[in-house]
Each structure stands twice: as C-alpha cells, then as structure tokens.
Amino acid sequence: MLHKFQDFFSLLPVMKQVISRFPVAFIFILLLTIISLLLLHSVELFSKGIMAKLYLIMGFGTMAHVSFKLYVENKSCSLLKYGIGSLILTFIIIFYAVVLLDKAAFSSILFFSLALALSWMFAPYISRKSSENSVWYFNYQTGVALFFAAIAAVVFGGGLSLLLLSIGYLFEVKVPNILYGDIWIITWGILFTSYVLSNIAKTFDYEDESCAFPKGIGFIANYILVPLMVAYIAVLYAYFFKIILQWELPKGNLGWMISAFGIIGIATKLIAYPICHKGTKLMALFDRYFYYALILPVVMLFIAIFMRINEYGVTEQRYAVVLLGVLFSIVILAAIIKKDQFHIKHVPMLLAILVIVASYGPWSGAEISLKSQLKRFQSLLVKYDLIVDGQVVKSTQDITFEDRKAISSIADYLAKNKWRKTQLMPLFETILSEQAVDKEDSKAVNSRNLLALINVKYVGKWQKKPKYDAEELFSYSNHQRLNNSMIDISGFDYIGRQNFYLYNKEKSSHNFLFIQNNKKKKIKSSITNSVLDISIDEKHHFKFDLNKHIRNMKKQGIETINKNNAEQLLLSQISTDGKVRIKIIIEQLNGKIINKNKVTCSNVKYILMLDFKN
Image (cartoon, rainbow, N blue to C red):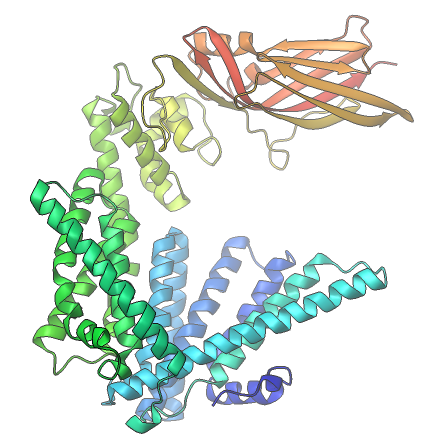
C-alpha cells in the first residue's frame, strides 16, 4: 500500500524505512543531492570534470544499488555477501561512469541509464519462478508509486516556492533565486526518491486474485490503445502494399515509425496482460495476433534502416533503430516459437541486455557510429584528392553540392564533442599548424572553420539547393575571450559590446547612454548596406566600410581568422578635431556576397572602445 500523503511531509518514518531497506542506495541519493547543490551554488570542491564524473557515479549508483538490493532480497543473501556485492557493483559503476564521461558519448550514457532503470522491473525475478501476474502486479505497484511521488514532489516543491514568492511580495523581502533551485533539488533528490523507494513492494509473489487490474487502465487499454494500434497496423500494411505495387523503396523515416509502432504495441501487451482474455473482442484479437502482425513491419524496418546506413553511414540514432529491430525479432521468435517458455519479464531483461552491450566497447553505438562517419568523411575527401599522406590539403577543384553537403554534415557530427574531435583532428594537424590555429580553441576549431581551411564551402543541413553560383557566404570570427585572452584597454575611457542582427534587413540602429565626467553622453550606432556609422553626442562621426575589409580578406584568401591575421578585424579612427579616438574589435562578421558584387552583412558583433582627449 502507498503511504498516506501526509507522511510525505513528515518524512522521518519514510526515510527510516528507506535507510533500513536500501542503505547503500540512500547514501548515493544523499551524495547525488549534495553534489547537485554544490554545482548549483558553483562550489567546486574539485574540477568541473571530476564533479561531473561524481554526479554520474551517484546517479548510476542509486539505480544500480536499488536493483541489486531487490535481487539480494530474492536470493536471501547474507549481510556479508550483500556488502561484498555492493562493493564490487560500486567499482563497476565507477569504471563505467569514468569511461563513458571521458568519451562524452551521450548515447552510451543514455543506454547505460536505460539498462539500470529497466533492471528495477526484473531484478527480483532473475532466478525466481514467479507467475506473470506477480511480475505484472509488482511493476504496477512501482509505477503507481512513481506517479504519486511525482505528483507529491510537484505539489510540495511548488507549494514551498509559492510560499517564498508570497513572502517576498507581501513583506518586500528579496528572496534569492538560487533558493528556489535548492528547494527543487532537495524535493526531487530526497523526498521524491524516498517516497518511491519506500513504496517498492517487499512481496514478489501474489495470488492471481490479489492482482487487481484497475478499471481506468482497462478502459484506456481496451478503448484507446488497442484501437489505435489496430488502426496503425492498417496504415502500415496499406503503405507496404503500395510499396509492392509501385515497386518503390521505403522512405527514410519509416524505421522510426515502425520502431514507435513496435514499442507502443509491446508496451500495450505488457500493460494489458491481466485482461488480455477478459477485454473486448478487439483486445483478444490484438493479443493473439500482434506478434504475427509485427513480422512484416520488422522486415521493412531492416530494409529501410540498412538503406539509410548504406547511404549515410551509422549514427547513434540509426544504431538504436537496428537495436530495436533486433529486440522485436527476438521477442517475435520467442513469443511464437517458444510461447510456453516466454515470460513477460523476458522483454525488459532482453532490452536491458541489448542496451548494456550497446553502451560500451568496440560494438557500442558511439564507437561504431564514430568509425562509420570518420570512414565516410575520409572517403569523400579522397574522392577529391583532399588527403595526401594522411593529412588534409586545400581543395583545388570543384566539389558537387551534394558532396559538400555530405562533408559538412559529417564534419558537424565529428566536431560535436571533444572525444569525436580527438579522432578527427589528426587529419588536420599539418594545416592547423600552417594556419597558426589554436587546436584547443573550440570556437576556432569547429566544422565551418575546419572546412574553410581546406577551401570547402560549408553547406547547412536545411539547404536544399546550391547558392554559391549567385551567393557566396562568409563568416569571420575573432573569438577574443576576456577570460583567457586579455584585451589592452589602456588609454580608453569607455568599453562596451554591440550587436547587429540584420538578417534580411539592410539597416539597423542602436542608441546607448553612458556617463563621462558626470555628463551624459550618447552613442548612436547604425549599419546601412554594410557600412557601420557611429556618432558620439551627434558631434563626432565615424564610418567604417565593412565592404572594403571583407573584399580585402577575400582577395587575400582569408577564410579563418587566426593569430596571424586577427588585425583584419581590428579597426580604429580619430575624429577630425582629434578629440575622440575609437577602436573596434570585430568578434563576429557574417553575411554573403551576391554575384561577387554586393556585400550584405547579416550579423555584426564587436567590442567598442572610446578615448576622449581632454
């Protein structure tokens, strides 16, 4: 039975029960909450990398140790065995967290987290011969506990936040915003998890009569889920019939549609298991023939996804679709051929095994996807003689729009995180050193800039047709960062940053006020047809023709700003009366050149410095 709602507020009885039953898991929960609070308050006891690893270890450890305790309760292990097992499990969790986080592979973290979450569903039943009704009812109770714990957490956290907000408003007290974050971290970290764990059933076997099926869920399964699934089957089979008649290849997104169909269908069968023979006739038909109806969609799923992989290579998303296809195939074979031995606990167990395998190792989704995309990238560059002796070189020939788009897309993928970059950067070692580009500068070493180094014009993923016959895009970045690249401001009285986002406009303006010698001064800045116009108090006027600078950089073949040519984006002038000196450091300059004639800026961002002569 669930604890009464008021016990959620008087948390001591609940926490006492949780600590008694799940002592190791509760330690991980407590540490996870503390680390979250430290990160929120920017208190770094260690480096950010170590704090992130600790956060991952505590999250993984919480889920893993709950499942392990459920398994131990099933096996009735001694306290000594439980302690040794917990220690071994902790070392495994630390290893996984450190390895996965070092690679920054989100898919691996997601797969491993999913495996640990799924383990709650079958941990007490790994070697226990329990009825399917017992497994269903145990998981039903856990699901109900999660649902009501979430509602209680929202009510409790929202109520406290509203209380603080009211105090601040009524008594004119400034409540620090960070305090709201503290409330929600403690609410979800301690209260929510304690409520859930305290309501995980201690009994693993139930009489069939005790496994009462809620009428509300029965209504949803009978009259919403099953009719929708039957309609989905009809649509899919109509599409397959169309493919056969027209003898056309399936569309690229078909894999995800079939994956969703399979997941929802199997989930419906598991949720409605106790009433599959007591529901409507449509429910009975669905329960009897669903796995047979899933055979053709799974065949089409493999055809569609392998066509996609053959054309565009493996990515984590396509890997996940293949993984689901394997799951569906095994479940179909087990449910049809080994029907008497097939148990509903085998579905989450099988999925957990697949995703744990996919989370780490040379066969993991992250590793296979990286190798596939790196191989495609190299193949496309070799096609245009852009790799010589294992190093990329500048392009001297035209590259088709389709291949430029493919190269750009793969470069985006490979430059997305540090781990992937470590596999990509050896190709660019020579050209980066020749161009004096800082390899550690993540802003300078991005997909656009890397392609610019080899004279390959970047193509965005949403671009459908080539524009460069009439339009030539340009993007220059200075990337001077005040925290690690100091700017000399000696001799200047004013420094500020200004942005212009023009997009399809030809003109934009800004007005700024500041105090100088107890007098208000007004800076009026505008940009028209790529000419930057700045005036001070309507007295001192400065014009900077960005067209000239852009054309000059184009003539010099400059595609990427680095230490050797950064002065190209540094502009300065002195007023005609000699009383004002202005200096501009352009940080970002984007736009296009139309028909090699008209220059149009879409984004200009710069640091403005002023020196007023007395």
